[in-house]
Amino acid sequence: MRINKAASLCAMALTVAIPRASVAQAQDWSMTDRALGRAGALQPGDVYKFSFPRSDLQVTVNGISVRAGLALGSWVAFKRANDGSTLAMGDLVLTPDEVPAVMAKLQAGGVEQTALHNHLIGESPRVMYMHIMAKGDAAKIAAAIRAGLEQSHTPLGAPGGAASIAMTLDTARLAATVGVTGKSNNGIYQIGVPRPETIKEDGETIPPSMGLATAINIQPTTAGRAVATGDFVLLPAEVNPVLRALKANGIAVTALHNHLLMDQPHVLFMHFWADGDEAAVERGLRAALDATAMAPGRGRKP
Image (cartoon, rainbow, N blue to C red; front, side):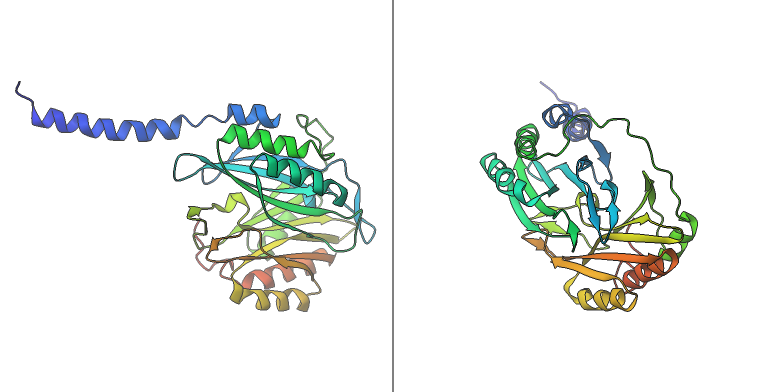
């Protein structure tokens, strides 16, 4: 039988192209939603992310009430791995007494820990942060994470319609001073600054939306004052310049540690706490960013 070569080549091209397109379009997170008991949200980098704010905790630092959006937000994010399985990463906010049972249940379900540490200093009650990672079937990973969270008092029902808190910060000035525009989240101004490098963990590219963007959260307190916390994602050579910039501007460094295990290039996470005049806090945060490759105007990748 005679075969038309041109038609055959077209058919071959279609058999290659169509499955690739359909794989991207067929990503269905509904089983993951069901396993975790709420809907996630798509993020840049084809990441699907869930938030579990610890609204049950009443945490204070030096008498200042810490809202969930400032420093008490558990999260879990999923993305397709190179081999077609799913990679999951997250950060769980836990009280010390919750840690052993949560860790045991996660380990039993194949979800590993990459770090366990503080982010704050002097908070009451004490809070710990458990960084997690897993690779495999998305729904099974989600079910294991749900089982782990059930060992804590983390609110697991669908988020309720809590009264929103108005934004009282001068966000236009804040964005201009820091050099990065953020978003308002229930009275908290949240800024994310991605690194310009591609960072991989065990060969998998980790998008900034999976916890590899410098996070700056700012909460107004009394008139003209604010607190800020978060973490700078830093290359080793940037650690001490950023530390000096923060301290020179009255911002305390509260922790310095890893969140990943096999990251390339290696990055460290520097947590901080600022409490002062809004404009002074903003200038201090900008000075710290300027000591990094993430400095505004330095040509970061979008």
